[in-house]
Length: 328
Image (cartoon, rainbow, N blue to C red; front, side, top):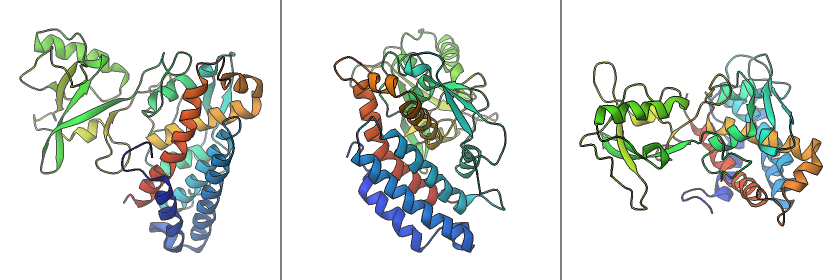
């Protein structure tokens, strides 16, 4: 168990139990129910397959496991006849030998798998090509290293600082985003908003909490700044409107970077979809480059990639379960 409160075996069992009592639309329609059950069955078996092979191969069943989970989510949540999909919806190319520069490009249309999946989970979609570097950096659980995410804009985890009636109303940012802010609160606010330019919507209504101290540090010694968000009338907004969590309530709060030329913001599961498609495509179509990246004696990417694939086995059931339990 890498993450507190996440138990992949238990989450997989809960997902399989849903096949006998599907949620929402999958409970009301025989065709949806059949797809829901069979897709979740394949999701589970593909996860088992991914866990039984090494990193040279595991991105392939991991990606297809997530696409099958996407079919189940669409059967449960996408209305009318838009829930059926065909085609990946994204394509991967390798313009250079560098793994992180692999390019993921969106397809036109509303009926491909990625478009329907994003609709099912209420995620933004890709409207321009993105690099694997950008996607990797946006997934908060993945280690960023030179050549894989270190050069791109990361997601930023916030710590909810104060709540009112169960709603977070202020939060703390730590790390480089809070470093070397000027002493003057107004100038510091302007500097912070500039730094948040890569996080669409994050600067809207943002304010630094008083009293402001540019020398404030976290217990680990990182610089910290306390912030809140306000509406046009001055009332406090929920932290989670500006910085949504990973999944269920209490699962953290994050500023998500915009990726690609149009600064698209994807939900966590859509980021995993994009990353796993890129990794599985590299494993299938660029096997020499993929195996070179996995060579522990030579590649600094080997361990971060291995760890990412292990994290996917743990995170995907939890994220899929949240989407199927989420009310619309």
